[in-house]
Length: 534
Image 1 (spheres, rainbow, N blue to C red):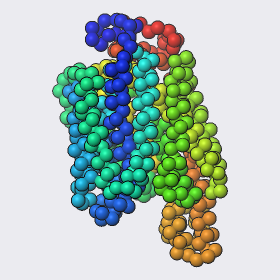
Image 2: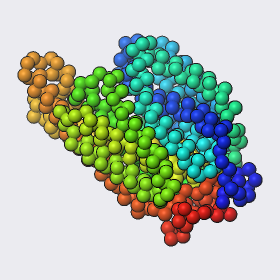
Image 3: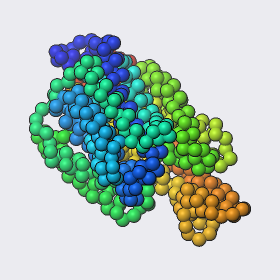
Image 4: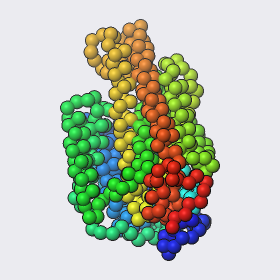
């Protein structure tokens, strides 16, 4: 039984109809565009550089500003959606995203583009938690909600992969601003269709908005994410370490504020629940692997196998086929067995994929690389599907947007950690392997630097340097794959040890559902047993 959110009384979970499924399709539009904007600049940077002539620092901010603002504002926007209504916040975010896209497309200098990217981050932060929270509201039946969340997860991860493809196609046929301009008609359609197919949601969270908590949230996430990304880019230097330290100090103040405020921005009780807190941690580990290792497969295709950027991006879509199969399979399995075993199985499958990639060498076949990538991506996305459903299933209805924002903030943090730590492992192994190649220089720093140096050398010297650098890169990629596999082992063990026996409470179960999700394992009924939410 579930609690009907309209009457507050026990009743059967109503099934979603055609309107709700069309509404889901409408909600996938902003999700796809927001996730694509994370990676859409990858192939456009050279064109933007020629047109706007940004400094090196400005170019970094053009790339990173969107992700920084998006990750910093997710929790704030989630709490705001619970108060003013998620559909309303979705519409505001769509309008802002469209306006910022226009500004970015016609930016006449680097500063304007950086400002536009920041506004895109604000709009994206309003859109992402709203889409998942509205799915929580629209799909009350647990089976249908599981299917909807699986589709949501697949579209989110697919958007990140499609971003470079779209970028490559557009900049080959149009000017660089077209990568932003394409957002405008999509958002215009969204503004028309959302009021028709997505149900109205009134703000249900009570009390004043915690402005101090919002400032502390930004002061926590922005410095931490910035510091982690800088370590991934430049190594463990004083400035990024200090930035992370500052963010952690502010984070402690944020936690204290949330524990003492009358109307906190974030309900920390959610994180104490095994189902929710455990799901967030599993999601961090998943994103650690899938985002942190992506740079290695991209570089391998382009710099080791010598593919053009667009051809490499097209081949990188192959693992998405495995993801398309793994997502529904994981959803079906989770209806029959404890989802902790499904999640542990996903992590185990990912271990196999990383084990394959740990053997890749410069002359390995393309099938080996794509096969390994497909296996680990399928396993990780299977986990992500289940952790999203687990977290949103136990989140109270009046905090659904906040819960979604916390889950997505964990995704951003996990991805940044993966890029930093796996990137550091790969760089360290590369530097050690290249230590005896000659005097210090670009060739000893990156594979790209070695390629540039080899191009200036003649005959056997250039070929020898390039062969050595490619071997060194593969050594680093192999080590990073082993590191990712270790994290997957930890993830599998964690799911079996701490999440076994924790079912997803029926949507609308409210406090009873939360209590069930946090109950000791011995007190939890079998997964297939009916849940009495009274």
